[in-house]
Image (cartoon, rainbow, N blue to C red; front, side, top):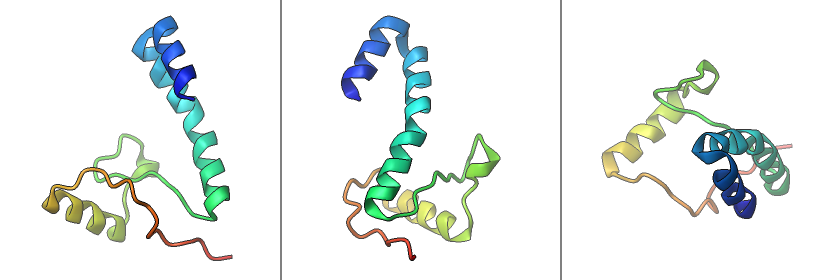
Length: 84
């Protein structure tokens, strides 16, 4: 995917890259969800899309990250598995 993204940036610039990423994001999220039997969704305390508004629990996590200064955490091994 990285190779395709770099090619898209060269051909269409950053606007094309954003379009490429948006088109691939759903497919990538769906495949990771199935692979890990997890529930993955986007959420924000300042959503541009109302479907991404964080609920009370998610807002609590966002605020914890803001207070501690943690921006990104790459180790997702502690994530809860989806039941079912």
